[in-house]
Image (cartoon, rainbow, N blue to C red):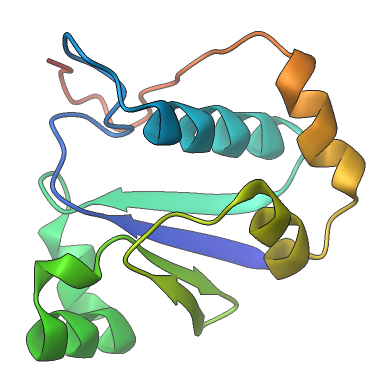
Length: 124
C-alpha cells in the first residue's frame, strides 16, 4: 500500500478545521484523510506550526520551501515523490495517487464528519 504525506501550511491545529469560518476544502481534506486512515490507508499530515522539524528533515520539502517559499504549501508526497504543491489533492487525486478504489472516496461522502486531533495541540 502506498503512503501519503501532506505538509500543511502553518495552521492553528492539526487539521485547520476550526475557528469561526471553516474552509470547506480543509474540511473535505480532513474528513477524507480521517476516513481513509480508518480504512487502513497510510496518510500522515504535518503542520508547519506544530512540527517544523519535519519540513527540515524532508529534503524535497526543504528544497521546495527554500526555492519557492511557503506559497508552495501544502505539499503532497506519495512514497517519497512530490505529487502536488500549492493546493490539496482533489478526491480523484487521492484515488489516483494512493491507487485505492474509488468507493473509498465515495463512501466518505455519506460518513459522519469527524475531525481527530492526533497531535495533542489545542485548537482555536
